Image 1 (cartoon, helix red, strand yellow):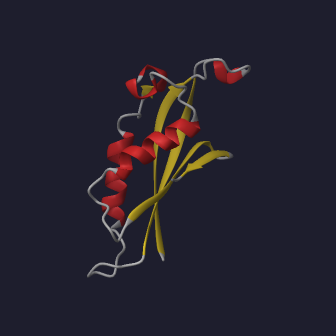
Image 2: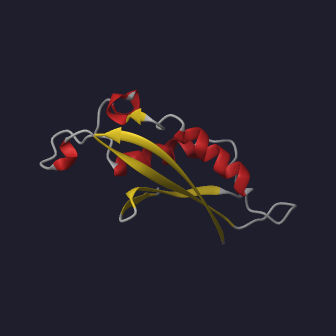
Length: 123
């Protein structure tokens, strides 16, 4: 089994409604995101998936969140824009990309709101 990981970053603000603490106030993060793809078969170039293609697709998904106030997005109309929910939303959007096939599957998305605070989502 092969595993490919690419990373990207974006900046965005949010607050956690109902939270008892500082995170209830508007604040921002320099979010980092990693996408992990797994598969058993390599293509004709001996690659599972081209890093460049995977990173471009991840950045396409992240464009929705970059330099935004996450609480105002339709994506988070019914739930708090926590790191956990953000990881799930990014996974769900990225998973639908046509860059994946029977040989390559999105395995996980890791979102960090700081170097020491990260969450990983996978199905």
